[in-house]
Length: 309
Ligand SMILES: NC(=O)c1ccc[n+]([C@@H]2O[C@H](COP(=O)([O-])OP(=O)(O)OC[C@H]3O[C@@H](n4cnc5c(N)ncnc54)[C@H](O)[C@@H]3O)[C@@H](O)[C@H]2O)c1
Image 1 (cartoon, protein in one colour):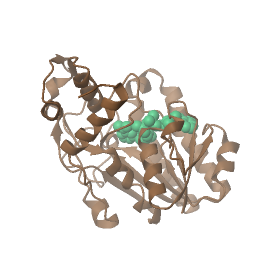
Image 2 (cartoon, rainbow, N blue to C red; image 1 turned 90 degrees about the vertical axis):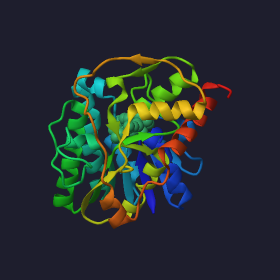
Image 3 (cartoon, rainbow, N blue to C red; image 1 turned 135 degrees about the horizontal axis):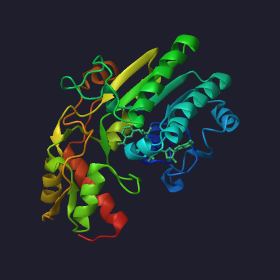
Image 4 (cartoon, helix red, strand yellow; image 1 turned 180 degrees about the horizontal axis):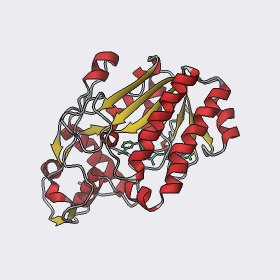
């Protein structure tokens, strides 16, 4: 298949592009390199440096492709609260621009990176795809719900095959946020640099940490799916943040102090997936457990930060 990956020079998109190449697919990465990095794009993939706001460039890049994997967008929740219009423009309006460009270019298949945040505060755990969408506490979550809704529209109007993958908590090599807002890279970096680890809620929050290579693999099987489908992508294991910290200490063989940041309003206390649907229908399941994933992540940051053992 020939697949165009938007945001393919970013954290998750670069892993998706590599897995596609490894499995013999033709890959074009479309990324404006706002955050993405050229060197993360696999050599065998073509890179089109363009912004999704440029409808003509997107349409031109799409020609001859069979499917799109759409990861481009903004993802810092706090920024979404500060700049809701800019955020919605990039995440929602540019997604609709992409769908329109696909329609014009005759590409009718899309896999979208959605998020477990669409469920809001879970009414029960594990979260299943038929659980109701919850109230959103910030514009970021609202943009994910909006794009999922537009996928449904393009399926109804134009018979697009659409898949929304609801990621739980991805982690692993190549996370690019600066300042970093996600727990795992913050924990790993602080521990490697022997600084105190910043922790909200004393680390009692429960999350479902999915290693990025497992997550990347989950994008391939849906390329053959028909209709409009939604799948959770998680490990089905709920882990307290403090247990991530303890696992990192165990791997490193030393401890650093905790910087107690208190409580953060709006945070969900616990969230983890049922990934039974994607296992049953597409044969995907997570393979890398937290300890192994953290080992690989630590090794990556050791090299990136130039810290010897
Ligand atoms: N990282 C997570 O924890 C997480 C969790 C759930 C969902 N997601 C979703 O996964 C997707 C990828 O996230 P990531 O962590 O890899 O982020 P990232 O910032 O590393 O990658 C996003 C990429 O999109 C590019 N981009 C942004 N706007 C663009 C535009 N208008 N035109 C072209 N390129 C553009 C950036 O340059 C970047 O390379 C996002 O949609 C995000 O919301 C991420």
